[in-house]
Image (cartoon, rainbow, N blue to C red; front, side):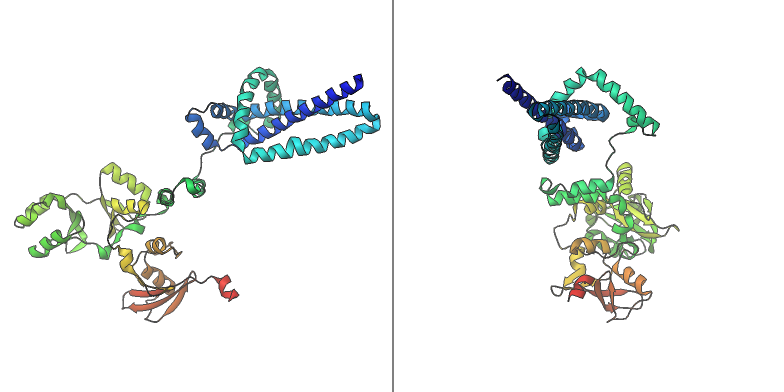
Length: 426
């Protein structure tokens, strides 16, 4: 009877030790698997378990030392207990069988299963564990400190500095992945806005500026009636003012200063007195930099110049903001005017259209490195201005020249992208 009670107690203690081993193994995986940014967010919101888990993870060597201390103590005790049980049941031959059974049991129930569960639901296991480990670390600190000092000494000899390990900040590409993986937590519109903000550094003023030949401004050499008509019909609040051509710019006119202009006689001197100094920026300036410069200088419009000082175009604050949030206007956009759908697979496109805007509007993947317009892309590829009916393919997109003149392409037809794998399958 005494032996039965003794065996029952030993088996009960063994089960308890295996449960402790499972808790140590699972909690270790759960704590390490926690999303550090979600953890920090919950800690700042006042979640007590999250705060404790964050403190524990600030020194992972101490946390791991505590868990390994407990796990090894439990596993070694279980092994000794199995040996006692095996000797009492079947003698020495049973010890080998008991060791094998214990190994399988620990592997399945105390390692694989709890660690898999912890990896799938880290917060459900890590937070309760943090409530236990934090005070337990205080109690066992001398032993943990001693083991960590020894292990860190070994790492130091190998050239590893544990104190140098810090939580790295996310890179731009990693942050893009986080935004993409947010799923339903962030609406598609806001997700696209966040990605556009991250991409501002990749985009330059050259990509969004109004090109030189499309700049609308006031030529002081024009008649008074022409200047007055331009001012009255302008859709923009700021217009560059120049003599003869845009390269001879003398200033920028804010039309709000001419609220009563229609009722007054045209006065060139008064008009010149109202001009603001033009603001020039070099081509190739990233939009992220230009946005900051607009804010610092309290400007909303800038003239883009090349290395020789020649004006290449105009970029405005609205152009940069539209790059982030999309078009502000509710009427027909320039993209609508540049693209006419002929059929489900073909579009008539103005060759002056900006490639990035075409890609964004139609979901295309035309190359954006190099020329900014479709005309420039085709001319660069063919190294000549093609005649109408000329056909070519760019990155899988069939393109036919519809109209051109001696100095540029005017209209092209673009078809659905042809993927090589699909072509072989057909």
